Length: 150
Ligand code: ADP
Image (cartoon, protein in one colour):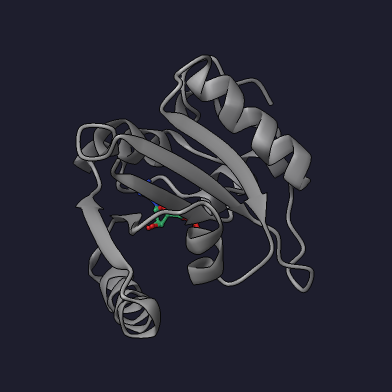
């Protein structure tokens, strides 16, 4: 059983995140989306809302699970018995960050990170852009996965 976690803040989960998970399902039997809770970091959406929106996106897809976590990512992977971390890469500026984290996780517990390049049509989409648009009352439906309501 090849199980991966897809960790992130997902404030909110965008169509870019959705695309990475859908493509990850071709590589893994199961993907556990880990919604990070960081007490020190104030988020726009509550963790309950972030989880609910991701559940709406995947409907009854049995190979995708959603769970909140407030530990180190390596401990979360151990808790759900995953040997892989799935991440998305939008740009060169994402790369150094992702590589450092991946190297650390590999060094700590031997967790393997699999990074998928973002579909070019989604590479400009970020949770930050979505939050900014929302703040000014703009329609962000096109930036969210199908079937997701704010
Ligand atoms: P974090 O707080 O860990 O950066 P994010 O919610 O911002 O969490 O992102 C989680 C993962 O999704 C990261 O690997 C990030 O690079 C990836 N990601 C973010 N936006 C996109 C996008 N538009 N397309 C593909 N992957 C993305």
